[in-house]
Length: 333
Ligand code: UFG
Image (cartoon, rainbow, N blue to C red; front, side, top):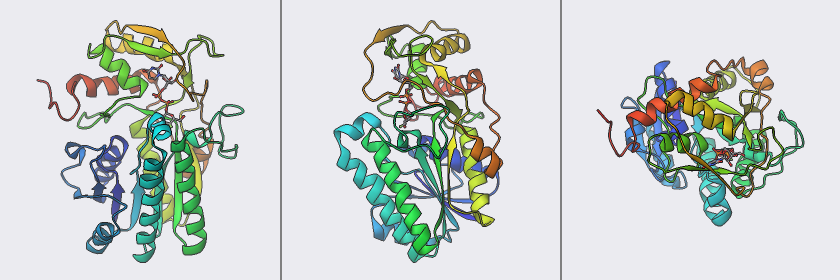
């Protein structure tokens, strides 16, 4: 099996590459390095640097490599930025996926596992969120991911390209063995920001709103360990290989933690004080997002095994402590 991983130098894509290689698959990575890091590419993967909107480039990769299936992590994913620069998101995310699907069709590659998001739902009417609930994205980012899902749906009908779309909730943690982890520039996600504060790279973090309708007033999210997330991708690949129909699955842990609970847990895990100050709400943040991942468990046989929030933060902390400046800063002795 040769698996093409688009975005294999990014946070989630690089974890997929490592876990595929762990199970002896042959992996081809494509990444533009716009947000990825070449240091995150597994040394045993074949690697091509380029943009998926470049049809000639993508054609060359498919011609040279004998691709069986595609894992697609190649997208811009910042909610705030997507509201400032919507066309950047339509171009990279939607048009990029169009070029990819055209190339897959021409090269008779019929299986794709796609990285989608809880942002396709917008503010939910109820939690836990199941896949049959309405999709009402409240950001350009969520809209582009929903559009990409719809493109795949029609390509499945017309060309027989089968897809599994995985709607992620809040992905966190890092590979247990420590080689790779989360390094975004700029960083917007709660857990890395909390850990950067623990490392005193930030004076304090801001809690975006303490007046939500939750027990402690801060937003609740469903955190999932990146290695559990990738396990679901590997199961989705096998599911498609065994003739499974195109499907959409949520990936989360069915449990929620508030911003304050995350900060308190990080204080325990790191033994550091982690100053936090109250601030304004961040526009567009739903108060509570919790997934029902029952469908993925039932149909894919997925069983997340790293569900304790302490373990997720410990693994993230292991990465941040050893790479305080991310990939570019090298490893601290
Ligand atoms: N938060 C803070 N302070 C910070 C950063 C975050 O209080 O400095 C809060 C946010 O307001 C939110 C929670 O921490 O309540 C989690 O925020 P993240 O930015 O880590 O994650 P989001 O839930 O906003 O975003 C995630 C994914 C997105 C996806 C979105 C779907 O990272 O890709 O869920 O709603 F689009």
